[in-house]
Length: 140
Image (cartoon, rainbow, N blue to C red; front, top):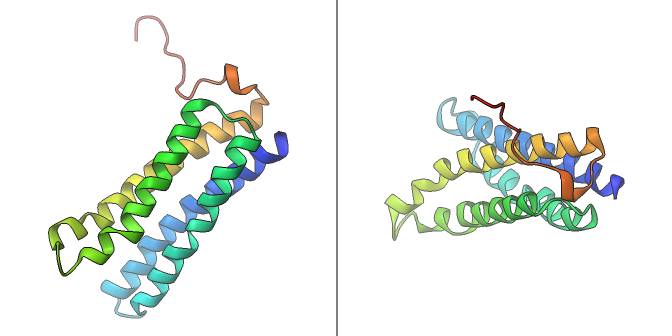
Protein backbone atom coordinates (compact mmCIF):
# COMPACT_ATOMS: atom_id res chain seq x y z
CA UNK A 1 0.00 0.00 0.00
CA UNK A 2 2.84 2.41 0.86
CA UNK A 3 4.57 1.74 -2.45
CA UNK A 4 1.37 2.42 -4.39
CA UNK A 5 0.88 5.70 -2.56
CA UNK A 6 4.47 6.71 -3.27
CA UNK A 7 4.04 5.87 -6.96
CA UNK A 8 0.78 7.87 -7.01
CA UNK A 9 2.58 10.85 -5.45
CA UNK A 10 5.46 10.67 -7.95
CA UNK A 11 3.27 10.43 -11.04
CA UNK A 12 0.96 13.16 -9.73
CA UNK A 13 4.02 15.41 -9.55
CA UNK A 14 5.00 14.32 -13.05
CA UNK A 15 1.54 15.25 -14.30
CA UNK A 16 1.68 18.71 -12.70
CA UNK A 17 5.18 19.29 -14.06
CA UNK A 18 3.96 18.13 -17.46
CA UNK A 19 1.11 20.64 -17.44
CA UNK A 20 3.60 23.40 -16.59
CA UNK A 21 5.82 22.22 -19.44
CA UNK A 22 2.79 22.30 -21.74
CA UNK A 23 2.35 26.00 -21.03
CA UNK A 24 6.03 26.56 -21.81
CA UNK A 25 5.74 24.57 -25.05
CA UNK A 26 2.69 26.61 -26.07
CA UNK A 27 4.65 29.78 -25.32
CA UNK A 28 7.53 28.57 -27.45
CA UNK A 29 5.10 28.04 -30.33
CA UNK A 30 2.91 31.14 -29.96
CA UNK A 31 5.10 33.78 -28.38
CA UNK A 32 8.67 32.85 -29.30
CA UNK A 33 7.85 31.23 -32.66
CA UNK A 34 10.68 28.76 -31.97
CA UNK A 35 8.91 25.40 -31.86
CA UNK A 36 6.09 23.83 -33.77
CA UNK A 37 2.86 22.74 -32.14
CA UNK A 38 4.04 19.15 -32.46
CA UNK A 39 5.99 19.39 -29.18
CA UNK A 40 2.91 20.65 -27.35
CA UNK A 41 0.62 18.03 -28.88
CA UNK A 42 3.03 15.17 -28.25
CA UNK A 43 3.55 16.03 -24.59
CA UNK A 44 -0.19 16.47 -24.19
CA UNK A 45 -0.81 12.91 -25.26
CA UNK A 46 2.06 11.60 -23.12
CA UNK A 47 0.38 13.15 -20.06
CA UNK A 48 -2.28 10.44 -20.25
CA UNK A 49 0.31 7.95 -18.95
CA UNK A 50 0.72 9.44 -15.45
CA UNK A 51 -3.04 9.80 -15.20
CA UNK A 52 -3.56 6.14 -16.00
CA UNK A 53 -0.96 5.17 -13.41
CA UNK A 54 -2.73 7.42 -10.88
CA UNK A 55 -6.04 5.68 -11.59
CA UNK A 56 -4.51 2.27 -10.90
CA UNK A 57 -2.41 3.21 -7.88
CA UNK A 58 -5.22 5.09 -6.16
CA UNK A 59 -7.04 1.76 -5.77
CA UNK A 60 -3.93 -0.26 -4.94
CA UNK A 61 -2.95 2.37 -2.37
CA UNK A 62 -6.47 2.49 -0.93
CA UNK A 63 -6.60 6.26 -1.17
CA UNK A 64 -9.48 8.14 0.45
CA UNK A 65 -12.72 8.37 -1.52
CA UNK A 66 -12.40 12.10 -2.07
CA UNK A 67 -8.97 11.65 -3.64
CA UNK A 68 -10.36 8.93 -5.89
CA UNK A 69 -13.21 11.20 -6.99
CA UNK A 70 -10.81 14.09 -7.69
CA UNK A 71 -8.51 11.78 -9.65
CA UNK A 72 -11.44 10.64 -11.79
CA UNK A 73 -12.47 14.29 -12.22
CA UNK A 74 -8.93 15.17 -13.30
CA UNK A 75 -8.99 12.33 -15.81
CA UNK A 76 -12.36 13.49 -17.18
CA UNK A 77 -11.19 17.11 -17.50
CA UNK A 78 -8.02 15.93 -19.25
CA UNK A 79 -10.02 13.84 -21.73
CA UNK A 80 -12.41 16.72 -22.40
CA UNK A 81 -9.52 19.11 -22.92
CA UNK A 82 -7.10 16.93 -24.88
CA UNK A 83 -9.41 14.68 -26.85
CA UNK A 84 -12.65 16.60 -27.35
CA UNK A 85 -12.41 20.39 -27.21
CA UNK A 86 -9.22 20.73 -29.22
CA UNK A 87 -10.84 18.97 -32.17
CA UNK A 88 -13.79 21.40 -32.19
CA UNK A 89 -11.73 24.30 -33.54
CA UNK A 90 -13.59 24.45 -36.84
CA UNK A 91 -17.08 23.49 -35.74
CA UNK A 92 -17.24 25.14 -32.29
CA UNK A 93 -14.35 27.58 -31.87
CA UNK A 94 -15.75 29.15 -28.70
CA UNK A 95 -15.90 25.74 -27.01
CA UNK A 96 -12.42 24.85 -28.23
CA UNK A 97 -11.18 28.08 -26.64
CA UNK A 98 -11.79 26.37 -23.29
CA UNK A 99 -8.76 24.15 -24.01
CA UNK A 100 -6.24 26.44 -22.23
CA UNK A 101 -8.74 27.22 -19.46
CA UNK A 102 -9.06 23.53 -18.68
CA UNK A 103 -5.26 23.37 -18.44
CA UNK A 104 -5.63 25.64 -15.41
CA UNK A 105 -8.18 23.20 -13.99
CA UNK A 106 -5.79 20.30 -14.68
CA UNK A 107 -3.02 22.15 -12.87
CA UNK A 108 -5.18 23.07 -9.86
CA UNK A 109 -6.61 19.56 -9.49
CA UNK A 110 -3.16 18.06 -9.93
CA UNK A 111 -1.69 20.29 -7.21
CA UNK A 112 -4.58 19.48 -4.88
CA UNK A 113 -3.94 15.77 -5.38
CA UNK A 114 -0.17 16.18 -4.96
CA UNK A 115 -0.77 17.99 -1.68
CA UNK A 116 -3.11 15.29 -0.42
CA UNK A 117 -0.78 12.50 -1.57
CA UNK A 118 2.17 14.22 0.09
CA UNK A 119 0.31 14.26 3.39
CA UNK A 120 -0.58 10.57 3.02
CA UNK A 121 2.95 9.53 2.16
CA UNK A 122 4.50 11.55 4.97
CA UNK A 123 2.01 10.59 7.65
CA UNK A 124 1.40 7.01 6.58
CA UNK A 125 -2.20 7.43 7.68
CA UNK A 126 -4.93 5.00 6.76
CA UNK A 127 -7.32 5.97 3.99
CA UNK A 128 -10.23 6.24 6.42
CA UNK A 129 -8.57 8.82 8.67
CA UNK A 130 -7.15 11.18 6.05
CA UNK A 131 -8.89 14.56 5.63
CA UNK A 132 -8.41 16.12 2.19
CA UNK A 133 -8.86 19.60 3.61
CA UNK A 134 -7.05 20.85 6.69
CA UNK A 135 -9.00 21.10 9.89
CA UNK A 136 -10.06 24.63 10.70
CA UNK A 137 -9.41 26.25 14.03
CA UNK A 138 -12.41 27.31 16.11
CA UNK A 139 -13.17 30.92 15.45
CA UNK A 140 -11.88 30.91 11.85
